[in-house]
Length: 195
Image (cartoon, rainbow, N blue to C red; front, top):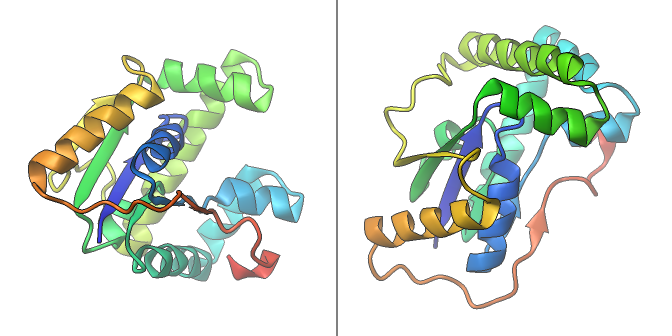
């Protein structure tokens, strides 16, 4: 059973790296996001963030779903807190990228101008840092328990996937990876109130 947790700040490329790795290793992708929840609810992501800041249960329920999905094993978890919440992860990876690079990605993805995207990135990062410290006592700037840190501004998602696979095989020699086709678990087909 293999579990790899990949985390990173807004626009870091953690989901793209996770998708590439899941495809490469034929593992399930556990990729639950507030972004998907916001889309399902027809509200802005920052509205969801604000609601989560006022209702701790949102985060608790969300993260419980991540842990439950990861417990089935043979998966790549690409959530902000996966490396802290999934206690039996085989590999914990942090994806870095300069905030201007991240803002540029968000601008392209979400149809913002560069300045709007930079404000958005800073607001989300600050909000999540504060919420996770308040709710869990987790400092997402502390990567002491991580096995690997990579810069996504220097590598493509496929290159990141290759480096993560190499680190996994070095850490767990002889790891048996599934031969089945990869399946994605992203929670998007769940009922709206499940998050």
